[in-house]
Image (cartoon, rainbow, N blue to C red; front, top):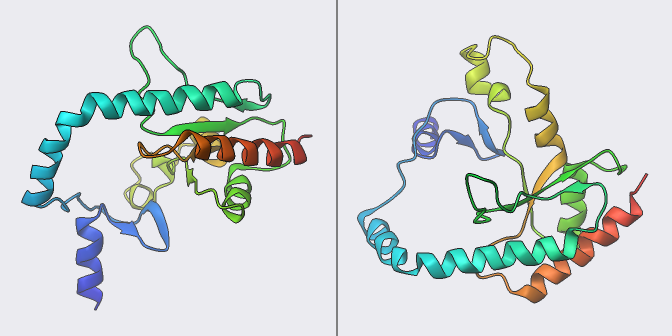
Length: 178
């Protein structure tokens, strides 16, 4: 059982099932099969359609949330890139008496699934064991993890669902405004 568990972790970036995105060992991404690769190649034919849909979802989120004070939305475009909204992340500022974890739990209780921002590299147990960051602190990364979350943004998401997500988010934020 121990060996089987270790093998499952090794093939999946050494994620721990109890706390996903936290690594306590070195693993790899060894999960794709030939059939999956074939499907992936076939999906490339839909790339432009999917990117247009993701950008449309991002635009709608921006329209519905741009007037909410105390949250930071993703950049739309820069001189170097155009956002494709692989995910739609928001960052809570100090305007609220709630952190991202609490907000995620509250949204979940209202039927809205979210994801946390990625766990900081310098705090990953595997890298701490290896002392790769020399015990240094990276407060911006830590703040982003504590105050950021990703809203639902799958390409199959309908506009009405985004409107419901935004209504729930706005309602919760209004209740926890300082």
